[in-house]
Image 1 (tube, rainbow, N blue to C red):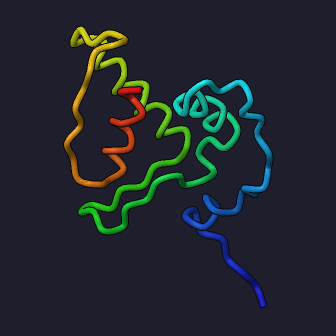
Image 2 (image 1 turned 30 degrees about the vertical axis):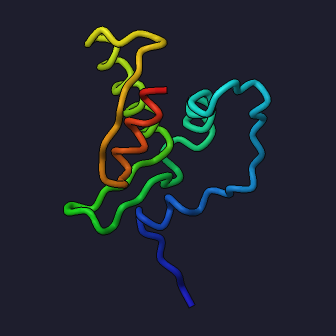
Length: 102
C-alpha cells in the first residue's frame, strides 16, 4: 500500500527525542534560539485550531515573534526592571508576549 506525504504531515516527522543541552540557559527565554536552530520549521510548536483563522507557529516562527515583541517593547522605552502587566486570553499570542516580556 502506497503512502502519501502532505506538507502538513512533514512538520511532525522530525524526531523529538533529539537531545538539546539547556545547561547554558539562565531563564526560559534563553532556549528559543537553540530550539529554533535545531528544529526550525520542521516542528509545530504552538497550534490553536480553534482560532479563526487557525493559528500555527513553528519553533523558528516563535523565536522570530518573541524577538519582534521584545524589540517593540524596547522601542517603547521599556527597560530591564520595568514591570509589565499582561492581560489576555490564553492563546499562542499570549505565550509570545509572555516570553518577549521576559
